[in-house]
Image (cartoon, rainbow, N blue to C red):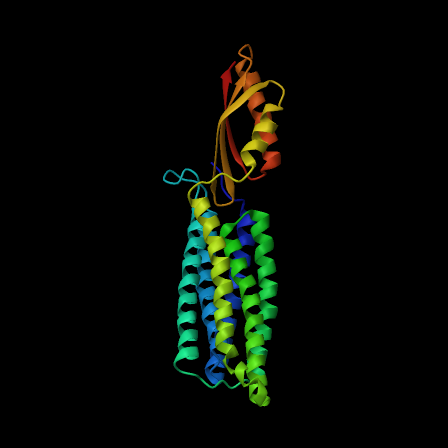
Length: 298
């Protein structure tokens, strides 16, 4: 039964823990500055970072559980917990966006709030951008290396933080300009509009992530993988045909089952050696694959 190697599990957990600690600091910083200045854009970012704090905790738990070996009740391992974690993060992001949109529309239509734009307003957002760029790269690198959807979800969150923080900085600059130059008074609502921009970005990315997560939970085969596996297997000397190919992901591990037609005159030992050759050929395409080959006499 397949399990995640210990060194891979430690590296994934380290990336998730670093993300969690960064989220704690940024959330507290943004809440404090958002309350002091009254900026909805910064408070929207604080809510986003608070959500990142929750999702980073979910990711850390998911990564720890997914590294457990298969057992009697989870014969394919515990990798699906990463997909569930990513789906939970997506739903939380969408709920946060709904709150931000509601508050932004309220401020634009019914109750204008005067915002105090200070040096700290820009300091918190620029600090956020620097930290988010760093941790999104670390998480994305680990996600690609270990094919972890939970780490990918975390990385996407922090990439959206970079975009949304940049939008908020522009909104704060516009509000500052409207206060200094009377002709630009129309820019005084830029902060609320920036918050709406943040929401649109986050909703778009969340829907993309949600679609991939649901595909994984529904055991959708990787696009183009079936054709590549069939071509590789049928190119192995001694294989007459390949059929009944099935694939499913459980976390980073791709489980592959297939049947091959082989020469009926082969001995059991020769047939076994041929199936091992087929397994190695497939694992060159998918290094983390857990392959099961069933030989049938031609």
